[in-house]
Image (cartoon, rainbow, N blue to C red; front, side, top):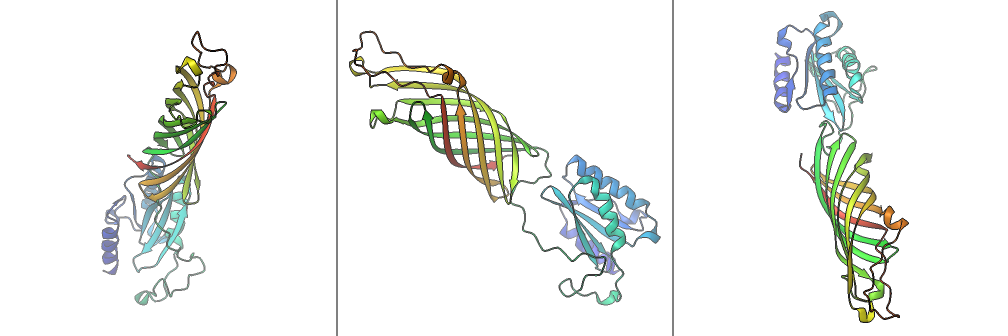
Length: 326
């Protein structure tokens, strides 16, 4: 009777999990419950665990519930007997799930006085039982059990260029498709304001728009993530130079391929939003090998100042936010 009540309490508290095996089907060793949304590898491991539990003879174990809970890409197995005794283990890889769970199924020691089971706070762990783990805070990052995720974000910041010394304020819209630790970034970037020091307060000398797609990898750093990415981008650059003296304003457009390398720190605000800090650098090999300058019009004065070249490389820092779409 007491075991039936315990099973009902566990069922109510785990509304988001599905029962893989029902003890009423004749299994003397209990049942296995697991999340409904796990990766294929974990799902196969849970199915194998259920199969082996069903084959165990009653003499090798005692009736209990094995709860499998997702925890940041790993699984925690919690075994609870009908008289309230419990133990848990953290499983790092799917192939270890069956061995760890079966070990729990057979290792919880018999209680000397089942009618008066001490509370977890006052009970001394047995020699073969690990002490109950300390409660861990809920992970703030996206659920690692999902094989595919889609994130989108917006950031803005300052970019410096060379050999032309431009100070550029730009914005970037970025989407990330994540496949486990791997990611594919897609970006759209544009300059808002660009100032050239030799032209005083003239801040419309340069603007650009670029579209890029690349590959990268996400690395866990404590409670945050760092995304490294290599991203080729097609960039359209426009320069408008009005320091050519009597020649007036000269302007021109250049289209080139730029290779960007970035590192982005993503600090979780909650399970669905990150605050981001991005450092990146870009190189245009064609402009580095052969600089391109605006041409002075015919009839320009001999002492007219030559326009600066299009920027061949740049580096910047941006702050923004990114949220989960999938």
